[in-house]
Image (cartoon, rainbow, N blue to C red; front, side):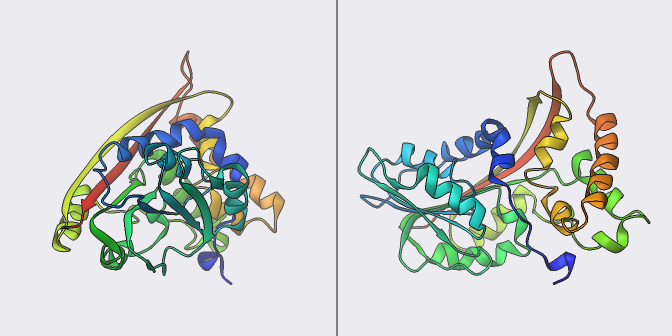
Length: 274
């Protein structure tokens, strides 16, 4: 398998180091989700990761039967250990292996939600029709994706990966700014499928602390393809990280209270007709 085709290896502990900041867009997304038609509701979380935000769904709909889907055994293991099983309101949290690129609902869902996952799925808008078809009447499809592919955290990574030193090892590994669409494009796709839709964007400014906090952040997400591609060569991996660290320090200087890290997110909520 080529580096470009490799699936990133995930580290739940590294991902969860910034769990509070990462969960905030999901709570903002859920605030815009209308009431669900089912009683109890049936909910799918596509790309559930370590399950920490899937658990927030149980807080919002405590009687719901919720399944988090992911293709990472490491993430699913952490999710099951930390959050799987019955919840206090009478509902249940389960976690199952699935590939978002091919997953299709096998029963009607009242809510299909996805948090910071679809940017990993090329052509993900082509999956919307199947997912909306799998909603119960009056059900909702909601997602948020990072919209920061033109931010220094990503452009510097791509610039270094494309430099003469690294291009042979890392060609095609990283995503570009076409990984996600603008809010108006998502709105157009969702309304064309007969949904009442809302789409918007927000730029969060996270104040990160600690040494090289932006590097620490991307080690849990955007840098995973590079770390995976170079996993068999620790010296090369460490050399890439050192070069990238130096560039990040210049792009994101530390202030007296921490390191400001602007992060744009794109959101969409689409309700199926009843």
